[in-house]
Length: 164
Image 1 (spheres, one colour):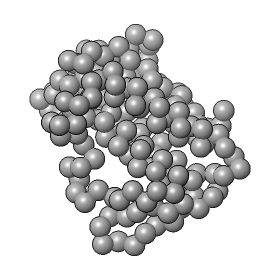
Image 2 (cartoon, rainbow, N blue to C red):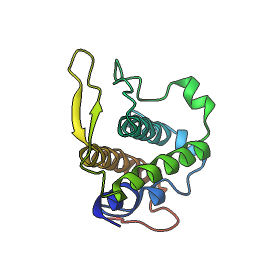
Image 3 (tube, rainbow, N blue to C red):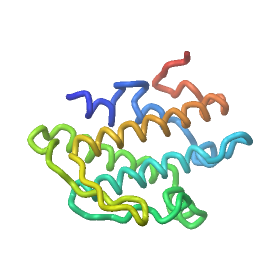
Image 4 (tube, rainbow, N blue to C red):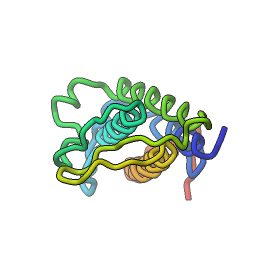
């Protein structure tokens, strides 16, 4: 397993994403902490949104960049349509696909086209660069999830985790 794959699905930089989301009920995942702008559910939904967009770009589908910053977060309709368990399953599926691209050393340096913010030109980058960006994005949001779990007194998860 290479470091990029580790960063996407294992414990390269912290506890693995799988462990960060384990052991939460639907109720706790949807709980909004007074000082947090979103729930754990919304943070994971956002991670899935960008994983799916990134995977589309890698597959050659030019999925548009969101027109505004509310679109990559779930609204009431999206939240009602997918349970926490279903969202976790979707995350695992997207993560496995991203990791499989990271494992494919023959295509990591292939160029892909990525849409940009409205009004900006189409961007080109390698699959490797897109996956590095995705891993960094996920790390940021998983850090937020860990902090919210700490605030909810649900950290560390059942399988353990860093407590410092």
